Image (cartoon, rainbow, N blue to C red; front, top):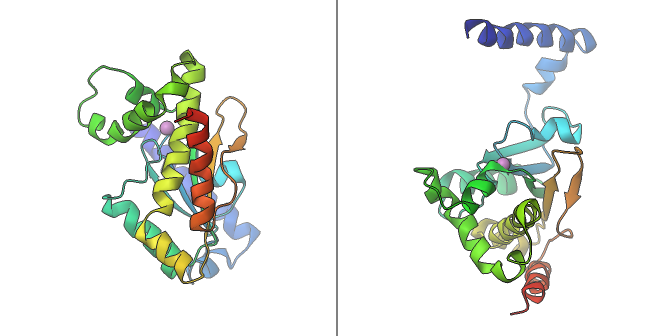
Length: 215
Ligand code: CO
């Protein structure tokens, strides 16, 4: 146990040495400030690290992660992150990235009791109910994968409906919203939405989805 935590600190020493060898000014320039172009809203899952899977460096992506990449309208944590990223850092793109094999989505699909987290996952159960017409035609992994995709689309919609994004669009600062799903089995990112930078584009996503469920 002690050995495993020690490894992290030793790795850190090694990393500092490597970065400094590459660029002696690296840490002094990093400490001057950040100007990331992207806000990443992703799952906490340890297998989906944003910088690694997009080959980006420290300073490029402002990150918020929670279980099952949810944008919950009453979550002060995510709202604060979005506000800071959009209004102060002025990111150009906000990405909601889910992933196949998401434990949060899987748990939401089960009827068993997982304790406190079931409250957090409630919104995924609502999405499942809402799209049940199309989900009930699918089985097993296919159904779970589709719910992962639908969850991302729902969260992009929730994001677009926050007062922060609405104000930004009204003021003509148009951060683009994106819905992505990462495939653990291939390492590939699959886009789920077009680039969305207006209320009309947001509605298009939902109209499209409404078309699918046929309601
Ligand atoms: Co997950």
